[in-house]
Length: 520
Image 1 (cartoon, one colour):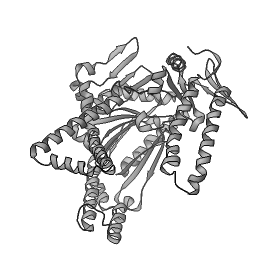
Image 2: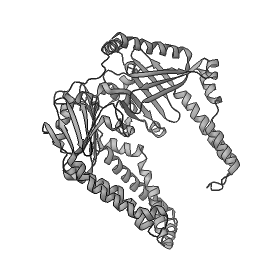
Image 3: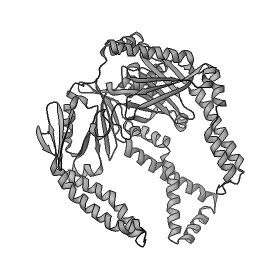
Image 4: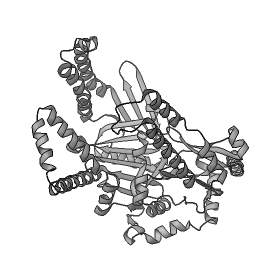
């Protein structure tokens, strides 16, 4: 348990800083004193003196920083104080903390420690308190204090009540979601309940991990890895051995098939190890107020966030995931999201129907809208006729420079034509995928070219709406709309070439929300 009152950071925090210092400076030492040992350039000449001096100063500063920095656990806030040349104090109330993150690296596991990060919606370091080294019991105690504190955020009570009423009026779920729930295996359809509140919604099985490793194509990493090793062998003057290996492998069809089989097995094995390392102990759970995401077999990442801080839901499908029937479920969360792709990802290899059903399981106030409207036919022609400046620039470069380093012996216009076809196909796919829908509570967009992304947000979570029309869109009766959700950086969602009628309804929809906010 963490003691109330003023505390000094754990002494292992100094060891953590020293390890970080070593990891940062060893490559620089190797560059300056080994690879460029004979260089007379001023950068390396002076760097051989400056680098050791900087490392010594940093090593001496680490214990001083540890001694002069303390934190105090108050009943309703955390106070961090630093007393070196000047005294600075940072106070963060528990009610302002939006996210609780833990990261347990192999160093932490070796020491029996963990790290804890408490984040608010403020930008930069002012809104973050980080404990690089902390006992797991202390981290749990601090997280419990945060969870017990009622959030002091803009409740928008009147609007939220209206949203709930609208949600109750539209109890019927999207048919696709209902079918997804019906098709979900029994062990996943009925989540397990732990204790009184916490519910586990999803834990991948070994079969799920194998599918994820194949869908991620991580097994293909064995090809560049093998090529790199052969290149290293040639650099070490083993050209004859490498050439002999290739001759023996290509001597018969059986040898070729055997080599490909061995590479496939190795690749699949490495892909499974990489996937298991990242998602081996993955768990998605929730209570009535919070969402918990845990992932990582050897190095564990943990995220705890309040449900009312979720600003939007994203369901993404890359081209490969579309072919294999997988989707990635992500949450847009208000707060300091460093590496937002990884932090807010629920699970990147969910069956499509399971991804839709999880939205309502994890966030009961959310529902995926059905019967989405397509863009008008005039939007299709406008997208096809819209100039592509990327194609123009690439074609101009190919025409004037005519690069001779291309591996395929084809004229420059062939590559320009291939790029043109890809751009046209992407625009056709973008038109086919584009959908839009809204009701009194939710707004939903679907867009993308070879990839497809479904965006779902509540009206109360949209902080800004922008409607724009260029000259061609004005003549065609079309518009572009941009929705902004609170995040760091802010999340912008753009839907191009929607009908004017929908854009006007959207403005009324959002203005109605603004008026309700002022009334409440």
